[in-house]
Image 1 (tube, one colour):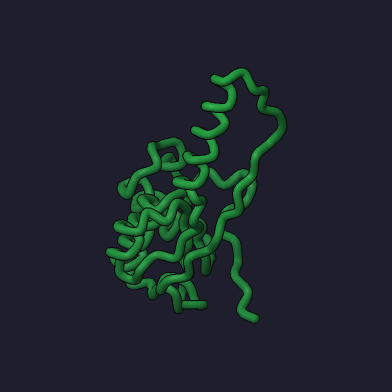
Image 2 (image 1 turned 90 degrees about the vertical axis):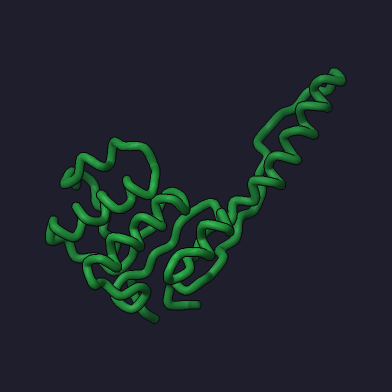
Length: 135
């Protein structure tokens, strides 16, 4: 089994990019700052596909091979974005369409006087593409 080292640890404040908007530019800057910090890592988990795409850009510009040197996975499964990256981005599919359907059904039930209680969960899945070793 190939182990991955986590690049994030409590208290790492090497980048002001951590407080910025979650965009491709943010992902590029955060990874550029991480690379120049000297922190050793071989995997990134990005908060969304836009950040993931920016991370891939910075890694490529730095000559870092994905997934051989660093694996990258993100969240959202914005298919148009994730499949147009080089390499294609592995991503967690949070099933937003299904969550929206469930939320609208709950809202309609509440509008009809029904009470909604508890926590509603929906499973997510990993869509493995070229940015991870499992692709």
